[in-house]
Figure (cartoon, rainbow, N blue to C red):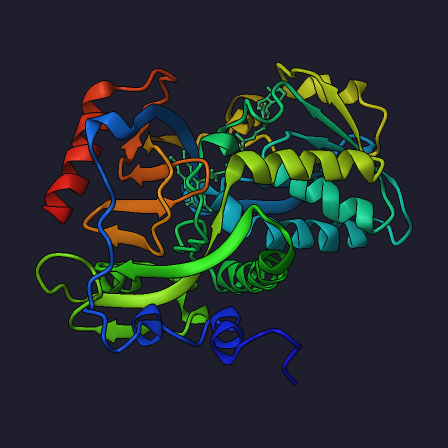
Length: 355
Ligand SMILES: Cc1cc2nc3c(=O)[nH]c(=O)nc-3n(C[C@H](O)[C@H](O)[C@H](O)COP(=O)(O)OP(=O)(O)OC[C@H]3O[C@@H](n4cnc5c(N)ncnc54)[C@H](O)[C@@H]3O)c2cc1C
């Protein structure tokens, strides 16, 4: 049944079933506006390290003396996309330890730690977050962030793939709910010129979208072949600030604390510890499989473009706080200083695309 005041077009749009091209009036040419990529639009260049883990993200239980340790890290370039599903998996692992509410320490306050705190608190646990940095100072704040479950965070075993599938399904449903009520999440069309390359090389969650192949995407310039689907665009600064506020209001304690070794965890009073340290897990738990993959974002003044774009190894997201241009993956580089040369290359790639 239709709710009052919602048009058929809006309803289909919410359901993700109507393509942007189909929504354009007939009289209009197929071309949508190009972004303004002029130097005078430049706001800032940011850099962050994606926590990649060879063999996939780690979601498992380990005994730590009298305590139980639950790992939730190594999400690479998919942390936002997987966050709700991973938190649900942690809750499931915790049910194997105890069926009643217990005291839980969450290490880390990036998107993974905050989401986990939110979910475990909902199940009645007494939760405390410990982290050396809180938003806006986390890697998560340096993220894009589009719903992109590209499949790099899954392991190769049948169980790991089944777990990854569960995770993306749960996350998808949660973001779908948020898109209707959280102003930091919305859906928008994506024009993807390289989707087939990803489908060939990864176990991908893209099958959640209704996907339309187009010989001529409604982009300015020459005809371009590609795929159109809807996806979620998340605004990390606002989203993480909201999430931190929400967990505090729900009664989660938040303490700034730095850990140097695994032995430091013995000091914690909680009986269950959830490791959401991102790249920090490499030092504390000696996980050699964790590798930083550095990514730059060129941020221009916000522009109301009605689409996101993926081409070659570049992408463009029209966030409300900035127009985001991305496309850099530097393995095993973790310098926190942005490299202006990489920023120039990203900007030039986008200018060439629209020229
Ligand atoms: C440029 C870029 C673009 C991206 N785009 C996307 C995207 O489009 N979609 C998507 O889904 N994902 C994207 N990602 C990936 C996503 O940002 C990450 O997967 C996610 O932020 C990881 O979250 P996290 O909570 O594990 O880590 P972090 O955000 O790094 O949080 C780790 C927490 O642990 C704390 N910590 C670490 N070490 C210690 C210690 N020793 N003691 C105490 N506390 C410690 C930190 O202070 C922090 O609070 C992108 C990432 C980058 C860099």
